[in-house]
Amino acid sequence: MGKKRGKSSGTGKSDSKKPFETVEVIIKKKVLGEAPEEHHFVVADGRKLKNIIELADALETMSEEIFSHHANEFKNDFSAWVKDVFYDHSLAEDISRAKNRLETQIAVLRRLVKELM
Image (cartoon, rainbow, N blue to C red; front, side, top):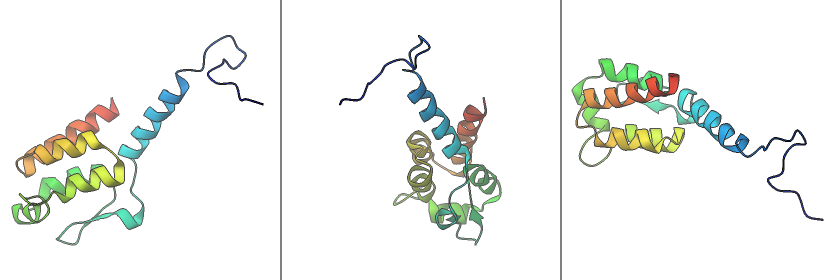
């Protein structure tokens, strides 16, 4: 009647690490992946960003005026996008704490480097 839980797959080894490994792969795929089209980030200058790598690139050339439109004392659209679409709460927090465009870009690049290692 009841299902077996936490038992080995018959090889004598425990499968206890597999769920965590799967979660790690899913998280990496999500952070490095592309947002569905309906969740692309539309920058105030008309550019559409599909992923976090494109966000890092956009921050490189974005004017301070455009940056301030999205990140100011009242809101941070970049942080919200990263949290809500890519489920990366840690990066979203780092972006929220950034004081300007350069600090935001550095936070994004650090996260990307960490994922690629």
